Amino acid sequence: MRYLLLFLLSVFGSQITNAQIYEFGIFAGGSNFIGDVGATNYISPNQLALGGIVKWNRSPRHAFRASLTYTNLKVEDSKSDDPRRIQRGYGFKNGLLEASLGIEFTFFDWDLHELTLKGTPYLYTGISTARHENFFFDNNGTLTQENTSSWAYGIPMVLGYKQVISPHFILAAEIGARFTFSDELDGSVPDAGSREQFSFGNTNSNDWYVFSGITLTYTFGQKPCYCDF
Image (cartoon, rainbow, N blue to C red; front, side, top):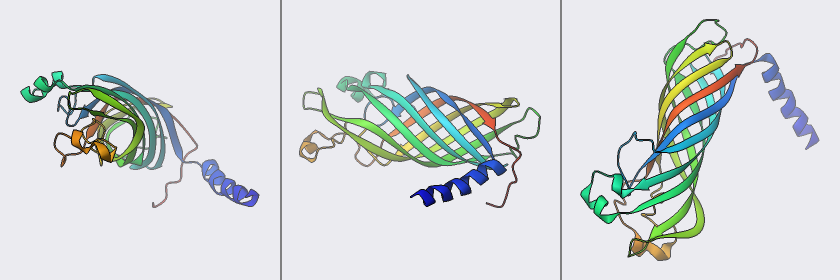
């Protein structure tokens, strides 16, 4: 184990010393949900979302990116445009902690060692996983907690614009939809198999959630030597 740790330190330590450009910072914005409960507007933030973000700018056109974001999804049928949902009157809150890892692509070259005020649109995608609480609605429409949690895996699809505002700080605004491979976030498909009778909604349509907000990151590192990668 000792020799393995020394090997990893020698490999990754030399990469850091020889320098790529790194960024770390915060995300702040809002969240909203699209599923079998509540409104179906794709961009309609109604709850605070906060998180942290780290980037490794591997070339002037792409960066590896990781983030951790928390929000408390709030969903109400009364906010929907569908009269049937309004009449049904379901609603819930569900704490959601998302971890995401992927690649960010810039539309224009993004060389942070050029001392100019530059900006570029960007796209981000990869994989995400979100921990959420499980619950269901009984035949009377009463929300019942299952006292368990699940992980919803998904694909983030993010569009944003970032701007250098000082030699070490970057400000960005982005909107990111997450398509999940789960239909459990809104209680329409109870996690416990014995409660299948409480399923409702479109079982062929999985859940979505959206983060809209800004990021502020601090960048550091020596001048990189970009290689083919």
